[in-house]
Amino acid sequence: PKGEVLHHSDRGSQYASHEYQKRLLKYGMKCSMSRKGNCYDNACIESFHSALKKELVYLEKFRTRKEARSRIFEYIEFFYNRKRVHSAIGYLTPFQHEQMYGQIA
Image (tube, rainbow, N blue to C red; front, side):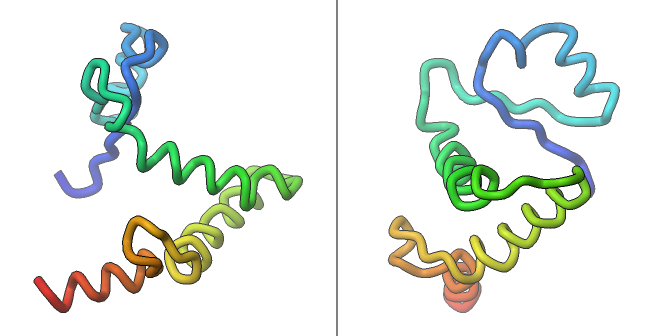
């Protein structure tokens, strides 16, 4: 459904616990877990989180959560998606790749 939040994780015991699953339901989130024994299911997001930490989070001291949210939004929307090239998509930015894909489809 529109607006549904999907929470994806590996199969760690903390994510599979009944308490955690109840919390997801409480907040209207749908649970998604990677396949058992398949480390490649999370590879893309793990790579993104690594870049986010190395290129922003570890380099700045945020004074408030609001400031952190704002800077992370700026990093994703204005740098990561529009300026940072990615080897996996032919050294294009995600925005360029999406535009190209839209023209083909």
